[in-house]
Length: 327
Image 1: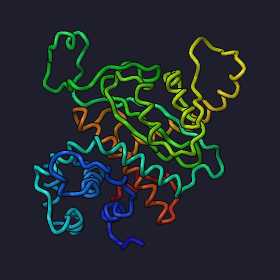
Image 2 (image 1 turned 120 degrees about the vertical axis):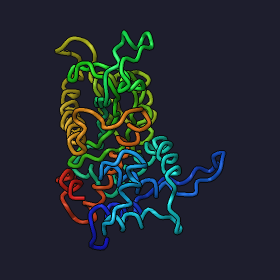
Image 3 (image 1 turned 45 degrees about the horizontal axis):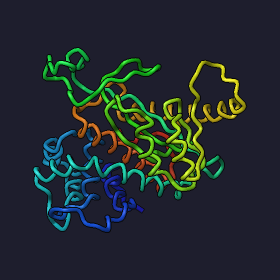
């Protein structure tokens, strides 16, 4: 059991019990990291919970003379050492490359622990959701000529259009979530808005548990190459067919059932996720790397809260927003 202390401190301490992927067999080039990924995860959780979006803001927060802050600062040491500001900046900037693998590994662990498919079919719903960038819009006529009318414009973002959101400028958060009584995010990627869902879907499939039998998606996932990839994994892709409605082929009724299951899982989860972290209108940062760090870090934090609720015997997936506000 965790000691009775602030929620933020308990979340940080819980990271020590989160399973992380084993290190690669072949060591990467360059100097080995002095500080572990687990320490960077702890700092990232503090930043998201307390809405600190830069290393400078994190260090300024840690300078406060407060009992909770002193506990937090003590937990951000490794072998008696505390990273410098430059180390925090460098490691946080590179961390988005690591987060999808951490999320996938943690998600598979949660599936084994929480058993979301004990009374449901082993299905996963995939979708992307619009994430608008902060600052101004870089209109296509200006983008084509390289003209940047205002310094607030995020030049790394892109345009996309959907039937629900219309045109938006920013990013896409691609997610795979369990279909069942508990919504567990199993895989996540964040890309520029004009990247197709079917292009990112193979990366999501890599992170899914082997026991998944149905992958549910909308029209954008109806791709022969993606269907073949699902078959190779021993699963079945169920995606909305293109063409005018109503469809009259033999499988339409089955697909209608699966589509309803999908709409009752991934779509409300997208809304819940944005509401929990307050990103319904736009992200608070600019740039692809910083947006990836924040959005994917928030997915990991959501998984961490599910683990906390399980250990504390709380209702899973309920009251997450007030829980994080209390931290």
